[in-house]
Image (cartoon, rainbow, N blue to C red):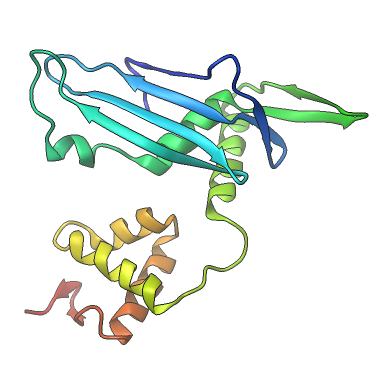
Length: 189
């Protein structure tokens, strides 16, 4: 997420938590203050159970500003925001012993990409996801909610999976009759 204006901050009393070989703040607050042409955006990011997550988002019109529009909601890439913001605050553990941890802030593109990958992997979780009828019903709901505007990409982003895995989820939902069959990538009428 590009911060051309706004900020992300860790409160001084926020503890650091270990995620893989990195230390991350347990909580980060993101604020894009908005102006007359753009609403105010705030987010609360937290590490819960070792997984960096977005726990709250608020979008509000500013004094004298325009209303909140669908465009504002579409512009939020939650997974990207969580990964990018936590990567900005991450430090890598280089030594651990006798109750002490030494961590350093790494700089450079390679270090940033490695940190992003580590955070994305932590967010994906461990092991295979249980594919239940309830889970496939949720896949079908996301797909239908985004019909006509890249529904497979919406499934991919909603469940933080690859395009191939999103396609597998969609196929399984179709096999259970939760979604209609498609021809040439388009829904049948």
